[in-house]
Length: 94
Image (tube, rainbow, N blue to C red; front, side, top):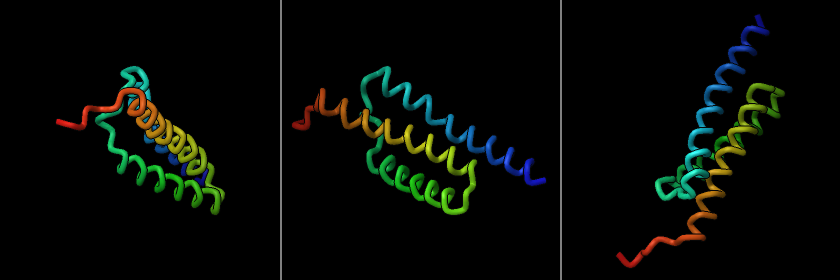
């Protein structure tokens, strides 16, 4: 039964992790991330980091793998947001 539970964990982790790929692709393609909330992605990334630490502590591979990939994707969105905003700052006088 443990194998089935692990497969369920990997399936769930795959779905939630892959859900970030369209956002990363869109930000990269558009070279803009004005609609991305820095606060939300920062808090989310910290939460994912904590999940990763938890997964390492209990040696739960579905949690470790999924949260490692999710953290990299979320941080890439934050990094692109920072980078693209520095290239073309918004007119803040309006």
